[in-house]
Image (tube, rainbow, N blue to C red):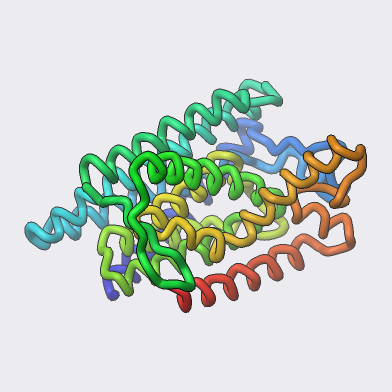
Length: 328
């Protein structure tokens, strides 16, 4: 436990220092946030706030991961195995973040407001998801055991069902976290709580590589939040949201608990559902269920301040995390 705290602090400090260095560079490069004219009017003042800040977390996680791997390698064969197991986890998470980085780069640097096409983005996410499934099944031989929460039993899914299911989970959670990133500090706060819950589960099950991986991600999120809370000095962009969504999906699947995301990830799930329902209902009736989707915008347009949205969504995620710990 002592080392987990230290590596979390390394990640936190690295993120803070990198933020102090990189945010002015992003400002100088005029890598600014572009707000929708049809969105909440309060968001228009954020126009020009540096975005693509997820790159800060990516670099900090790299630094902390190297430190964590070096520590474990020095602990003999068992430590070496844990260090090796971390590498594909980091590569996969970075793959998701890289797709977001390309999207952000096209939007804010090349001034292509559409960024990556939805098809290209989904293809990239699909490639990373397939890579992770291949690693789990043909390198780790993890098997297809999957926990059913509340019943607290594991079932063996047929491989033909397990593979598309896991890929769907990764695609769904990365896009859901991406939709959650629409209010200062919201995605980072919610993801910090979710990743903390998954890290606690990893500690309980003694999955060393996930304990370190999760601790590093928590430190990066907390460090980033210092600059991302309202009023935000930097936005994470798709770089950060796809990175964090990838980390959540990777951890849940590695723990053989993909269904736990429906509980602990209740906020990203509801954000995605709100968009789906809004689009479906509008096409059917020409009317809207919510004042605006994703869900956080509905509450903003209902009079909630950004800090209230973040606080209540974080509390809901915390309660959901406690429930998740009780039903595994």
